[in-house]
Length: 434
Ligand SMILES: Cc1ncc(COP(=O)(O)O)c(C=O)c1O
Image (cartoon, rainbow, N blue to C red):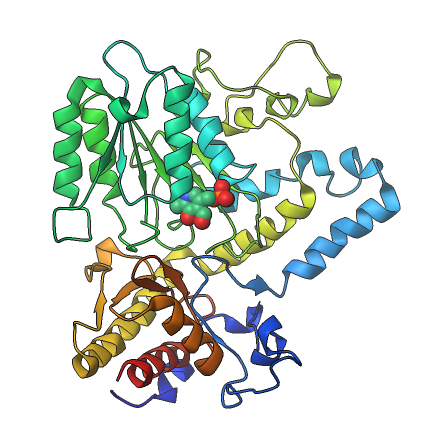
């Protein structure tokens, strides 16, 4: 395997300085109980788990403290008064959130958490009627989506066994082929009520062909929704132009907004402007100008804001805003370019390790085509992945997460990961597997 070349990081430094990168000595498992510090050569850990929980921007704490100060000094006055009343707090998040997912500001809203948003959106969009009852989704889905979708089907008195079609890759393959998704949609035809897929699959890292699948669903008269947990902030999106009906994402992965941070939702404008659209209602979904008049009637605006049910947590929204500002300043184009360079480098290094240790011991599951992946590389091992990941973490300072039975996911995040991180991961694998 080649040596590390520091010129790579010097030429393409990313934005790591804007983030807190965990250091060996700070991790709970490396406190007094474990004085041994094998990572002394690299005080910072090589963090590949930004697809699970993104790192903390340095700007997050001061922004959050500002809101704590307002609460401390103003109490309830902060809701309606001051330079930035909490009742309008989300206004400033709309434009950057819209640019992130390729939407108009009226089509996006920051609210709830991801699975809650899946339910809130399915309450509007899953309307089984007559023959049109079926949902097409991926078999290898994050479990929460599977539970949510099945429970929605049951909510309508239907059996998920008969009304949910979970599409598997072909035998011997890991990756779903777009042509197979399109063929499945056509085959289900007028029984297909809805297509729900992950934009980027959590397990394989495959970026689905979102425009083609959206068009295929529409061709047979179905609604098309996307879970963008692993896509938002990872790959460029154009939800409005792709005619996506709805989408939801979380903000704690690539959006670096902290554990359990508030999620996002997209609803195409054709629904918000349709007076007959049905949704779950709450006071925060009424027009902001009249919300505090406490009227008896529900008066929603013709925007995605109408889907809000409760007033949002400002302390959870502030980190989302901090993060969106970073994305807005740098832009998805620059991030995606660096992402392709970094992930391309990691793949080359991993290929060199595979040449050393053999493709039986290690193989890359994520597609190589840049149009079919974000920054994550999912790697299959024949050794015990739990033990391997623990060794990488404890002995080499390389943090990546495992997914049963045999995959470790490595996500070099263009905002803060480095070429050195990538080299350390490959070097550690070569040593541990060799
Ligand atoms: C694809 C996907 N969907 C849903 C979820 C669940 O998210 P939440 O707990 O925020 O509802 C996750 C969490 O990692 C996810 O990766």
